Image (cartoon, rainbow, N blue to C red; front, side, top):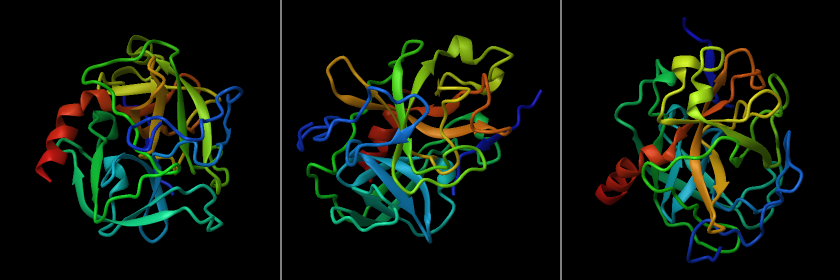
Length: 262
């Protein structure tokens, strides 16, 4: 049986990774709220004629996003963005030089996986207290059931609702694969190369695509464990249909090789 789903198109120390100078507020976020400005300093806005997706700064001149986000020929990324409606001062706008989509991505089959792309920037981002790269997980690492992670982005506040203008964050506990792949959950659409997180009232929504699923490690650093990929076609907040993310730990070799060759 084919499940209806939709991809989510929408619309530290400075020298290290995963250590925000402005720590995120993680005390009371359940169904989502405005993020503390610059507390997710690796979050970027991917824009062509208008903002389309999110993404993650993983090196001064490299951004990770979802393959399904790449639909135009020309892009820029905006770093240190918070309020889309206001020029606040610290924003950095950098053009994309190369767009490299995973070779096994099939745009006709989002649930087949491999929804990941890398963007090489024309210039290096200036790293500071508001712009910092995220850490990447170790190859093959996995997260335990109910592990607390956070999705961030400017997507719709709920299915059919308004687009956020200020960066939002929401707590999305991980749903382990053995649960997410049950027949009354995502079934065969849940691959081991994906991370399921959230569900019911907690989810990403249209416009959050490509953005990070950030999880804090035991070392205190934040690791981007997922790239926002798709939700159920019936709505962002559908019970037993957690948000699906590309599992970054499954693609570390491809990420490393791509960055080394380009």
